[in-house]
Image (cartoon, rainbow, N blue to C red):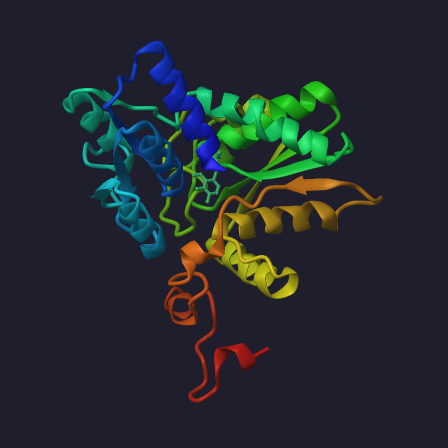
Length: 294
Ligand SMILES: Cc1ncc(COP(=O)(O)O)c(C=O)c1O
């Protein structure tokens, strides 16, 4: 999904000269935008320097290395205002590397535009225009904002529900106008430690907040009940869909997006030891495989 924003931002920068042939793309990413950027960078013969949190899943880091990405690992626990933090480091690197282009996916609304031009129309066509709810995780906010704009232009009655993660500042901001106090969370791809410019909060009708545990258990349930092996943010989206469905008093069409594959989280949310270590699964009784427990 993030290849769409990577293509849109990189190719428009190449077209208007902000990025030159042989130049360098520098970005901060939870891993999936970095993967999209890597694909587009290879295609155009560009260098790709990505700032990624050290805590990012091992599978994502391995995939990025395999694609030739130069990784700059930062401590995900640093506060956003710290110069070495995830939120600051890419900007600083871009300023110091000659020929660098910083797409700035968190603040550049070309991100939203990519989804307005592609994901929104695709959903509308696939659903033959019959949509009651669009439920979507919010990370940079590009997906939900771009898709919401397109869907509401077609039918202002489509209700847009964002799924944020507990620990992110977005939900408090949406509900009260004041950003919440950030707390550590493990879900990759959703939420932020500070307010950013891409989320168009005015296009969102409601915001739900999922915990790490609810998102991870929903992702595991999705694999076992639907045969869809997807990531933690997809579990969050499914959890959001279930919240909306549970309070319906008549049938409705609810659309959601599963953003990435569970193969990127085999060592974390699909690993029982990791889940137990973080308290998301009960301790196994000696000798009893966790899968046999209720
Ligand atoms: C796995 C995953 N899901 C969801 C999102 C959120 O999408 P957006 O950034 O468009 O809000 C991201 C963003 O990086 C992601 O990596």
